[in-house]
Length: 208
Image (cartoon, rainbow, N blue to C red; front, top):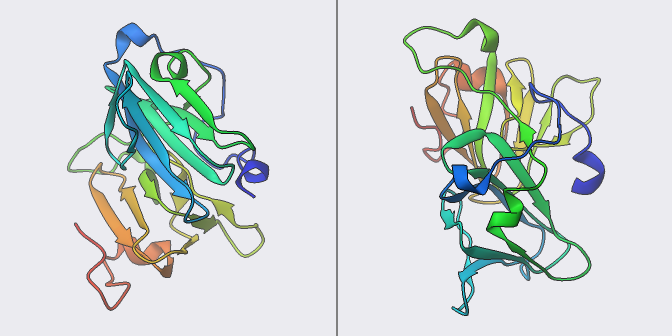
């Protein structure tokens, strides 16, 4: 289960309590989204409007509410304009309704990304950084380590392997020079093949 795995960190930075002031952001941006069942539905609304499903990459305004319906759902947000502060939300046995302003006052974890450049950022040599994740993906650093659910901001080593479990699930990765590529599942692949630009699947699923 994801709750048992979330405590295992393989990203660059540790999970630490941090606060992003609501005054510093216009809302929150969805960077990770997953539902384990077809009944899952993470939605948002402003005031008494109808609930709308949250989409990957969507900005939810500061005056909105977030609803997480079932325990098997999880979602990751960053404050708009603050991509290195991540808020991880998970479902529970009861429906949750959270105010965006309150989410921004809660705990976050810190991640880091390479600078966009024509050259490699030495701090990220032979590493890819997760910038978006939709659906369940798992990563294994080497044959002696267990699989871990992939999260926004995770570091993926060139020696590792990734498995994208569901059809049309997508994973967006940043290269050490700040360029990005998106991989579409279902698919299992060696990370080094992303660096080499290999066509991993019979469908066009790696973009440069």
